[in-house]
Length: 153
Image (cartoon, rainbow, N blue to C red; front, side, top):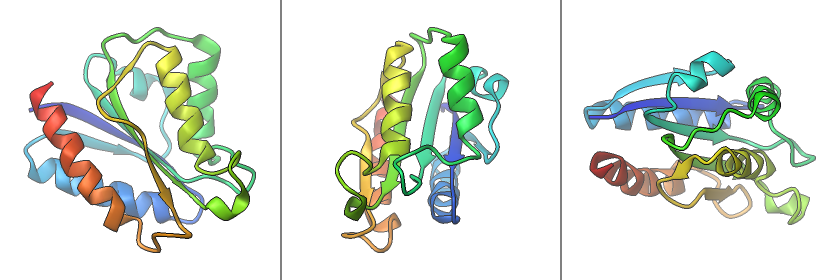
């Protein structure tokens, strides 16, 4: 089974709730999984030969939450190429803030990981709070598919 780091960006706790459900599912599936609520560059780089899953909400301006921003900035500043990292992103947002801001936190992280040559296991999941009050209703089916891809990787 895979070694998976789950890296969370949260403002009001919604992304953390999704991430905790993700960790439970992955652990029940037999994976070695760790949750990071205030992730550091060193913790993230420890997974560059494994799998990383970013679960991020978005601030009202389409930005990365404060607890995840230092990791994003460190990755952007040091720019460590990670061609062996396989990853996924669950982006939480609210489309009423506009197209440019919608799921901006997760979108920015996904774009940076692609620039760092990491390989997505699946397309980013964008969860719209205007459509899905309970993000887990959308996230869990996506996670089941992502976990199958992780098992095969």
